[in-house]
Amino acid sequence: MRELSSRLAAMIRISSIRLAMEPMEMRAGTETALARVIAVFVAAKPHCAYLCANRRATRMKVLAHV
Image (cartoon, rainbow, N blue to C red; front, top):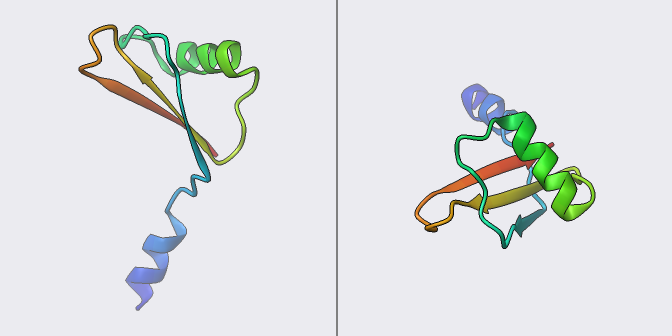
């Protein structure tokens, strides 16, 4: 039971998921991805995940703001 409670405490709570409609460069780091989220969605809201795809829509990058 102790292992289960420690695993539950480490989970990230996501209350909403937002998808960017324009492609993003997948080589971008965390800081660049966050700047892109702020530019597109005005602000990064807590407990929200932001999904960005590349130009060919073959890869996705997730930025979770906790």
